[in-house]
Structures are given as C-alpha cells and as structure tokens.
Image 1: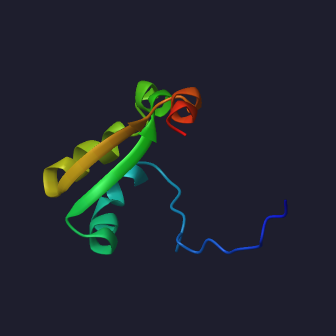
Image 2: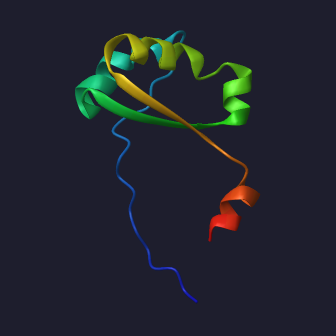
Amino acid sequence: MTLNSFNFNTTPGLRFGSDQAKASCKEIINKLGSRILFITDKGLMSLGLTKPTIDELKKKVLLKCLIMLKLILLKKLF
C-alpha cells in the first residue's frame, strides 16, 4: 500500500510567547466564528495547558470541548 502525497495548509502562523494561548483567542474567533470545537487529550487537560484558551473562548463563543480518549478505545469503534 502506498500513501499519496498531500499538503495540509491549515496553519497560517505559529504564535510564540508568554500568554499567547489566551491572547490568540480573538484571532481564533475571527477565523473560526462563534461556534468552535476544541479537541484535546486527557494529558494536556491534566497539565492545565489548555485551560487559559478554553476559559477565554468560553467567555466569548459557544465552545464544545472534546477530550480524546486513548487510541485503544477508538480502535474498538472500527
């Protein structure tokens, strides 16, 4: 089986710096609108890395947060 080549051009930029997770929410809303699906995993949630972004987005938009389960559980679905 061969994998065809493809481009994944959905990241227009990367932000680095202190408090960027919270500061970039305005740009996220401008690009994605008022209904956002935020996908993360249990590990990042437990570290608190997603909390500033999620909290800021919840203030301004309808946010659905999906925490991905372990791959083993996903494999059972298929």
